[in-house]
Each structure stands twice: as structure tokens, then as C-alpha cells.
Length: 99
Image 1 (tube, rainbow, N blue to C red):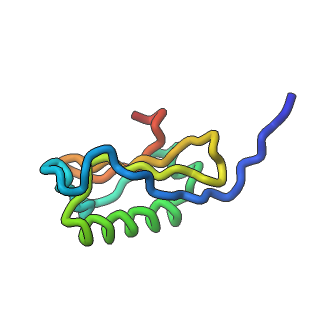
Image 2: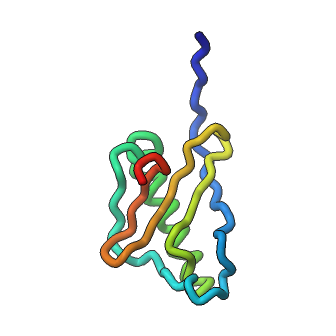
């Protein structure tokens, strides 16, 4: 039995699926941030907060982003990725398996 060692995460934003000038690319990621326990356990609150701040800067610069933003963990290519989803109330940081 082999056990894979996880490396410290290296989260890189994946290009969103819709164009930045698409009418649905309008989310600014300014709402309160919540995170699932699985996301917090895997990536930690400081890294999640850092990536959220990065998203806020991106959204300001681009005048909005798609509601779903994905960060790939380049240090651990077998995943999982970290997702941020903005809805009407909050922004949630979660793993794909939490969805």
C-alpha cells in the first residue's frame, strides 16, 4: 500500500469558462466569505482568505467575474481543486465534493 504525500498547496486560478466581457461575468466577490469544513481542513483559513482577496482584486480589475471561480492546486495535481461560488447571500469556499 502506497501513501501519497500532500505537498503545501500552490493554488493557481483557472481561466473561467465564460468570457470576461460576457454579461454573466458580473460577480464582484464582495460578500461575506464562508468555507466548508473540508476546504478549511485541506487549505486552511489563511490561504482561503488570501485567494479570496486575490479574487476580489481580479473582479475589480475586470469589472466582474463568473459566479464560479476555480483554483487548481499545482503542487498536488491529483486534487482536489478549491472552488469559490458567489450566490445571493455569501461567497462559499468549497471542494468540488462539497457541491
